[in-house]
Amino acid sequence: MTTVNVSDRPAHDLKADALVLATVETAGKAALAAGHGLPRGAATHVAAQLAALQATGSAEEVLTIAGVPGVAAARVVLTGLGKGTSRTTSFDHEVLRRAAGAAVRSLKNAARVALALPTTGAESVAAVAEGAALGAYRYAGVRGPSAKAGKGVTAITVLTSDARLKPVKAAATRAAVLADAKAYARDLVNTPPNKLFPQSFADSVKARNTAASAKVTVKVLDEVALEKGGFGGIVGVGQGSVNPPRMVTLTWNPPKAKGSVALVGKGITFDSGGLNLKPATGMLTMKSDMAGAAAVAATVFAAAELGLPVKVTGYLCLAENMPSGTAQRPSDVVTMRNGTTVEILDTDAEGRMVLGDGICLAGEGNPDAIVDIATLTGAQMVALGARVAGIMANDDAFRDRVRAAADVAGEASWPMPLPTDLRSQLDSGVADLAHKGERWGGMLTAGLFLQEFVTEGTPWAHVDIAGPSYNDGSAWGYTPKGATGYGVGTLLSLVEDYAG
Image 1: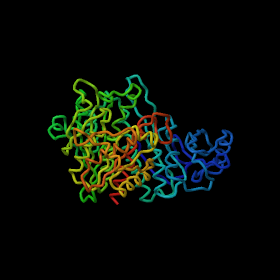
Image 2: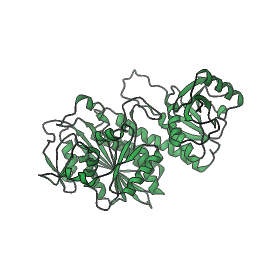
Image 3: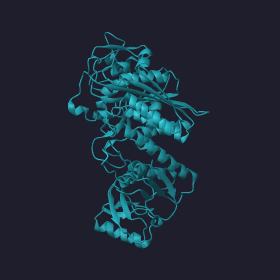
Image 4: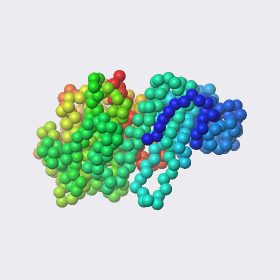
């Protein structure tokens, strides 16, 4: 875990492997941003280097210079904030996150990093701290004994004149917890599918809980218990694999809780499509089909670590969707946890089946609200692209509350409707419900299907993260290539909102 601290010491005087400063774009040229804290000679030297390198100060432009006179750090890293002047002190929090993340992500063999970016209060300090800590993430991978690991960032110090204020110190603590939670979610998603399957996912949760002094209660339902409990959706999806399904429940239940929130995560540890087999290229990122469950697990642990006064229950719906002689068939009819019968039309639309059972189970606990999060539909990416999640809900006010939490976290999202005229697409001639509608509006009919399993009167939101959960392109900002950890920030911010 990377430590995050705040300090009011002068930037030039702090011994670190790297000092990160910000630049702004002014008339097409880069200038040092406010808050750098350098003495005149050092600032003049940096300005000359920026001119020599023809820096622009554009957002996320990162440059490194060494041997700055009067600066104790061995390297000075300059990260762009975009349009502004050397006197601009207020920047969008997401701009600060990305700038800090891009700078730290660029570093190699730097254990201690200090950042002196423009900050005006606890929220902007939090943004810098979060971006830096998230940018420090590295996935170790599965490597042989001869592999040499690079030296990663282990300590981050955010420089601010407000370092002695309690809200600023608390912001640094939260940033470290959030980054560690996102790192856990990223590690789970990045793990190869032969190493992460339903039982090993459950084992990982148990191991993390032990390391965290068992603040969270963990319960695991195996395939026998799932069959006996009437979880026909998750049993049907998992029946084709040699790795049977699991339903993992994590509960953080503090004394005098101010409310209760249930989080349900899709956890398909590998999605081949089942008998409706995906094309070969369509499987390349399908180890990430459990990103929703990863986000839920990480959020529950983060809520416990921060001691938030809200009961948070996470439901991890874990299965591996594989073709075999025992696999689920199109036209099968299964009975869900709440007794609803569902006709299977496409075995590659399996996520809604495991979530349906998870939402039923969550409703039995009578929470104040339910949020499910899932890499559910390709239609989400068609509509919103690779970086923006879609949010649907049975209650507009609650949908807006979830979106507001996403905005606070810097996780891009967009509200989507649940049109009642599309509901007829889910009618079945042989069961209570068909599990898939037509191609057009596929993200919306998936949401309509899930809504069928929500307890009446319970606010519920569905977050489709098919695009933003996994970055198949180049790294950017604080987002690495591969797993992003999307959703942890949104869910944690929502729980904090319930905590008041």
